[in-house]
Image (cartoon, rainbow, N blue to C red; front, side, top):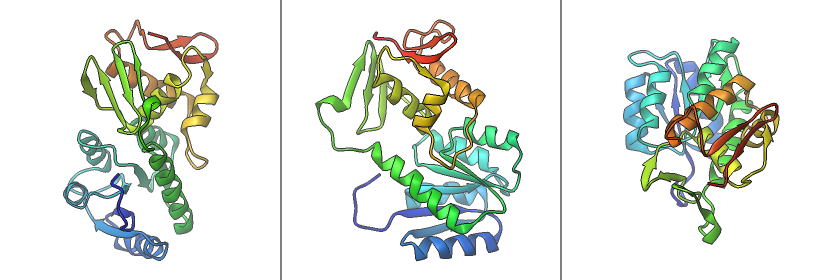
Length: 235
């Protein structure tokens, strides 16, 4: 996220004009700049052209689904995303969070609650971009973590992690050798509004291992501590 004096920009993606109108009014009243899109293809164009600081993304979109928009965006950047949907069953929450979304809101919702979640996610995202110092870069064997740059290198090659995967790796790498329970990890990487499940965490861990481990079935970085949870190996 660039350090500028402009208001933080929110891309609001929903095919229902009434939803966009209400949320946009609340967000602008709270000092945010708002740009809008009504379908998946337009959302991709606006995300790339307007460079928003956060995206509120409806899952049920015409032309291109919200989940597909999210997958494509994640190949180019890690802009935080709050998913929005009228389908509020547990499966939808799991799908949204497994994709790597930063939060999840079910319709109907309180616009004030959405604004609160936007602030919470942006605050957490900003915390990742602290001024660089010597301890901001960490090397564990062939794995290098650049916290200010929100970047992970493996054997010198950049690895594209979702925000959730990065937070898990950052937590474990900052406490090498310490075993965290699932509840402890969820508490550290989640915010007070997120619906996160144990099996969702396991899926994030599995995805992380597939990206940083030579053999995910025999990990050498992110280790399972049976009966407890997970920890980061020293090398």
